[in-house]
Image 1: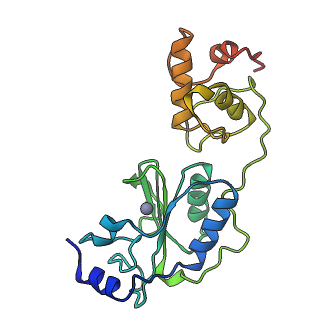
Image 2: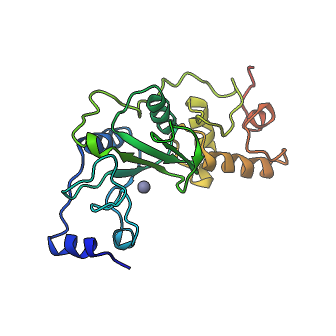
Length: 223
Ligand SMILES: [Zn+2]
């Protein structure tokens, strides 16, 4: 059931603005190859009787109610940057972040960044309405740590923060029949690919790339 606010917004031409932080985060994510999943909500989202931050007439405006049409949230692919954003919020940085949702968890400024359950597997970032014009400066949570891990030098498993490195790229390329992106991040798809590989080699199926799995890839184990 669409709200009156929705019809008013449509009648005014569906205009909306993006906060400075969102524009900058979007550009920096794109430069790092992180998928952009959207910022303006889809039509069902916009027509919802409970419009949230992807709606330019949100009823969750906090701490300021906005008189103009701003969207205040962005959805991105999940990765180690989600953990970095959260760590930096907890360290008192990122004044523009209101809450983060990723991997089925929710972390908000109002809850002092404690972990609650959340609806999204992708990374959702909502902004503070009193920090619309904040620039993120040279902040870049998407920067990759240098890949220093060679294949066979450690056990890879799905954990938080997600493991990354050249060894993960090796595994992803070796699993290329499973259409796993070779992004160097050991997430759920890679762990599932490892399960498939372990099953095909009669290994214990646990999604963890340890010594036996490395050997099955033909890699000498060096740890
Ligand atoms: Zn979202």
